[in-house]
Length: 222
Image 1 (cartoon, rainbow, N blue to C red):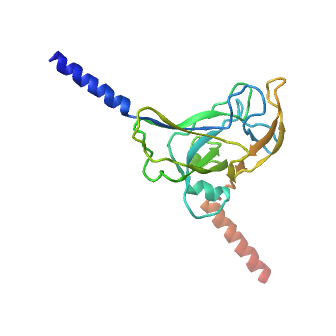
Image 2 (cartoon, helix red, strand yellow; image 1 turned 45 degrees about the horizontal axis):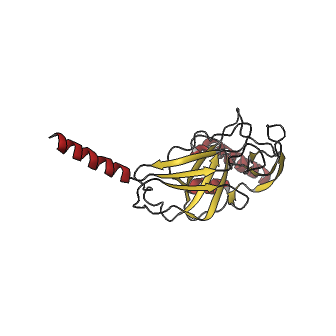
Image 3 (cartoon, helix red, strand yellow; image 1 turned 120 degrees about the vertical axis):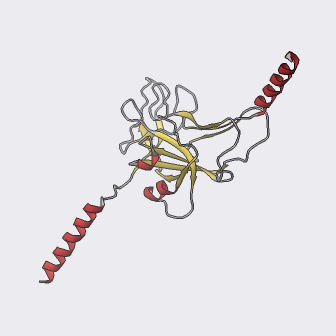
């Protein structure tokens, strides 16, 4: 009986080790504590906006076809790989605006249905739930797609880095002169500006505006 249990345990351990994990990691930071590495997220003045009082989030997924490149359209067409974004995205010490992190980790080495072969899109947003974001940036990585499940032993990691070669969908890469908080470190020479989404007026507000416009038009005709 004891030998049988040992054999079962041995088989289970082999099966467990064969269950490869898939992890998708996104970074805009190379790991160095100095130097102008990565692309910081900046405000309209070129200052890195990720700090103790201004948190950002990152979600990885793909864009449904159709629509245009406006922030509202991209946000509505974005399909997230994981319901939990980098929450919040973490910043290296004294390097505001930069981060590393993993958005998705599956012990079964399988992406959700519909993701395989889709081009990877990263959405940066200012709220923990991307659907309610008021400012976003979105990037695609040409040639980087969600890979089909591999039958392998060990972990498979898909990594990609936000650089000047990345393709912005919303939020362009622009020149900045952002000084990092580390004394003597090189300044950032490029940054990514988040794009604000215009608030959608409530139904009651839109209706009142329409009634007011009609009243004004009727008064002018009279």
